Length: 336
Image (tube, rainbow, N blue to C red; front, side, top):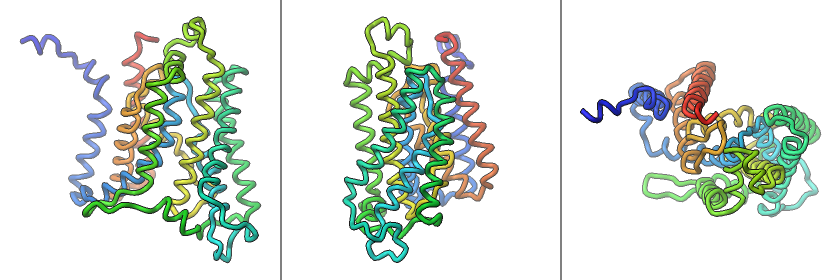
């Protein structure tokens, strides 16, 4: 039969192997605890995915250009702590800055996005103009940002920063009820971010340049693309996304410490690869990123729900990352 002749097990493994593994994991979770498939859990998963989607959209743009960002999680943590100190309730007896009045939420958004963009700008300049590999650049930035955040955290009291202004709590924890399902405001913010990135990647010259750089930097340069400038811009944009995500994460959790954001970058990178964003460069879609984040969050939440030890979760997530990257490398071996 014709379909038998065209059947290629290796190709199927490359294209869908990771999804098969994740589906098996999901089936195991549901068999162990059928109540996992509830509207409440779905709402929680969607809310958790929303913050991760914003982070992953920033990381994905870098991976498309054959880069990465190990500092993403620490940037999220810094933005969370800064936002938390600025948005405490005026009646909070433990208010970090008691003389500070009510700061408008849009102002704080601008501040944390600017901080993230500045860090991203530095990453981009080092990568683009000093020719330091993204891995080493962002590894160094990760350590520096964590140090800066810890110094600031110690300065303001070295205790969980909580007691937020009701406006901020509503902004980050509010939701719309649709029957028995709760759709959080954070999900709407993620949808806005998704739309923005989709337009940027698919309808602008900047987006075309990103894919061109990822596909072949030298060919892009010869074609007239200002590779260094575009790299700086994509790193700065990613930093702004991390800043906004950090602010939302602080509000969602209800507090912030200097350790918030730990390993978020690895979850984001893993979700991007699961969603089809290739480390070979020049390949990736917004829909793939969103799908990867939701799948990865579903597995994370499910493993916790059935009581799997956090240590085993680390092992499983690490194995998924290795498998996803291995399959990606096999898929684009000819391109390399």
